[in-house]
Length: 457
Image (cartoon, rainbow, N blue to C red):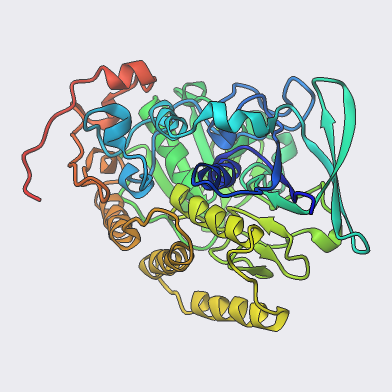
């Protein structure tokens, strides 16, 4: 019997989780593992965590995948993304604050990766051009552009794992008069450096996490004013002087924005914080997931297996309170289905399971409900595999605390500290207010004198 062959599309957090799942099986002595090829558009692992100054196109003329910006700090407690088999204590050798900047988080994420074991599977600078499925032969054909050779390549696979993410294709709305706006108009996807907007009046359109975070970053680095325009619900935080929320922008006249409440304001730049589109241009219509950003996309059994093509697996397609551990839980479950450790039920049963989760999702009417919903989803996946158990419910409780901390002070919640649900270690405090710490490099952050705490357990 010939070995099965699997294509993993993307070497970001989800693709790396799938590679680690199979590598864990190999180390456990599992025999006859499938052959794996991982295609990655960039020239390094990490996906969205690879910061680049580029926008638009990369050096190969491909659309830039990353939406990462220079001064990003974690906007959720690190204790809620801590790996059960690799703690922050193990990586850094000491306690650090609960909200580290981008470079520090990436160092931790990559620290768990055994590059020697993983890199042998990955083909870099190979964006996927097309995927087809031959019903008669029960095989996928995957065509990629190999920019290292300058040629297209096609190979056949038994399974395809789509791990390309869904935060890279901007959803760009239109407003009357935007063509005549004299300043810069960009999407959050192309936002790179808050210093660009120092001394400027900035309009952010949207009420998402990116809007609240970019507003905070630009205020921190000296924007003259930041206005956040929302469609239906305001973010509702108590912003400092210089930051305000307004109802929907209706149109622009020159550099003046008009809002639905009749007010106007002059702006120097506009950032559309209006979310992203699910975009899989390499898939034909019958294989393409069609959804919006939500906690449980329809047509995916267990949030992963495409309805009608159960050998097509989508990882990380949910909106996310949980991140890395959820990707791991999915990857271990997908691996065990591929290895025939878990038997997929009949089509009707899979549809009933999807409907059951969608009904539960419809009953969520608060952020706390949504956190519990996603925790329950992860718990079901973890219980079905040998993935190292982790305290999902304790991390859900921390996420609820995080929501309250942001309401208490949106500009200071990153100064809060939490206790690790894995090791019990209490995070250290930042030595100064978050707004006053401008050097967010790895070296700059790790050289700070963190404040040890004496709080009781």
